[in-house]
Length: 473
Image 1 (cartoon, rainbow, N blue to C red):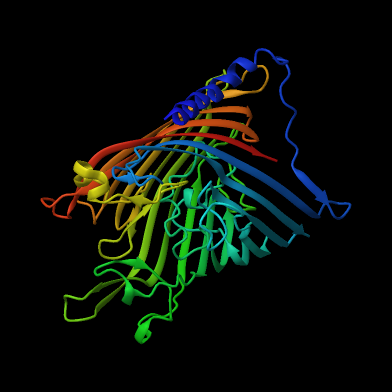
Image 2 (image 1 turned 45 degrees about the vertical axis):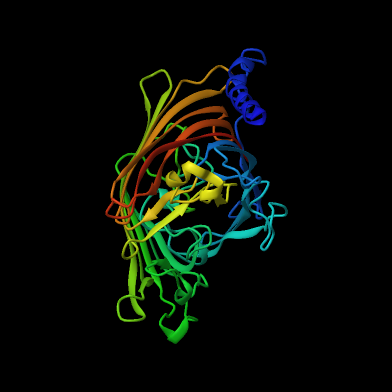
């Protein structure tokens, strides 16, 4: 317990120490302007190499789901964790006016007991792997570009194409990457895409071949619905299918660049951005249900179909230097009958206790798993919104920005809809290049309930404090 209290104290010191430091160290000298790392290969700059690197470190204090047990096999009500949320490098080469090559690699979610190499039982030596790798050709400059590879030109929404360099919030809500690590490679799939801008209309379209996930449905729990893309299953019941994706947005105010697919979460460079977008993702025969009580092996196949509608607004307010940022997303998801997927980001707790270990608390144990697991994707609807206000900068160029998010989820597999929220504070030392974020986030938890139509019912909200240091160049 002393360790958890100590970590809480450190989180608070981290939050407030920059505010006091700004008055002591050259208060009238703002940070130097950020200059991108760009190497010109030709004298005129038509051929060049751009390099980016960034890191996001997390420290968390988690109120665990009911029934979580620790390494001593006793109830563990809370847990602490320090590790790497993201560590990335990106290179892209513009080879003349028409050719572009992009490579993006790194690691994610390394903790003291998770994120290690394949087959490891701890968190050491994580695998460095490719996130993006594609080649692109300009057919009609600005209006029509086409490319192929492991790409991030996603459909559905702005947040499905989100950049991890400039979130307004601590992180993405995760359900925006609707098939993450199921049939894709960290929100990427192999495919062919087309993108461009027609005046104020920005579009991206893709035909992808999702990854085979290696799951054989005939060894799954009865009535389980799961993602797949396998042609190795028994009786050749499954074949590899292609997915279609697209997203369009209309830019009412300033025009955003689309050289790369990564959508800005918060712009602090004076642009007025007001966009409305809509998109889709469809993967035929990609999920299934297996019901052994319906005449033997009763197998049904379903399409994964996702639709999104969103609004993004980012603009300076008044004349004193405030910046307002808001984003709203409605996402309709259909993975098949009663599909539900639980996700726990940066989760180091792995086990739910049994009746002997938990005693009288056994009846309230979480249905969704240990630690900070929660229902994240499922057949149903999600309404998400975020709002933040960046305060005017200090003389040294730093600034504070409080924000709030809210998420309403209504899943077919859960009788009651849920609502959760996050409260956060950004401290920008030098815009997005150096910032510290502290967030308190909530999530719904559920327990078994024989009187509920779905067999589960809500059991309140649990919380989590997260401190992040974010740097990129």
